[in-house]
Image (cartoon, rainbow, N blue to C red; front, top):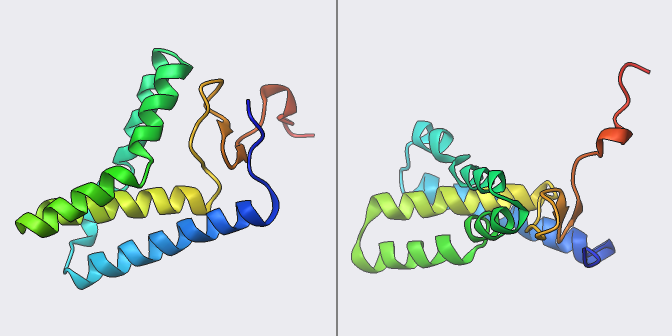
Amino acid sequence: MPEPVTGNVRRWLRLEGGAILVLACLLYARAGGNWATFAMLFLVPDLSILAYLVGPRLGAALYNAAHSYVGPLLLYAAAMDFGLAGEGAASLIWLAHIGFDRAVGFGLKYPTAFRDTHLGRIGRRRDEVELFT
């Protein structure tokens, strides 16, 4: 696995994610979005994790496609251009999800393992877990 970003660069990337989360939520509220719908759809991008059942290479590729800013930004642009309110709302929920993930340190995945991300390793290895000690 290549070295993840560290130090101030990592902090800036996480701050950027938080800013995207806040901005997406503000735009969603300004558009009059339904917060129950927001809550129901917020975790939908995480369904891409199911691709890890096939293997880490496919899992990382599909997870990264679902967790890149490119998709929701293109969807938002198309929604604004064609006046598609539902798609615009969906793109903001998608952006909020990605921003949240980045803010808490979940980065794009390397094909080595789910826990290997560009923002560092997430979770603990099984041998690192302490049970009631």
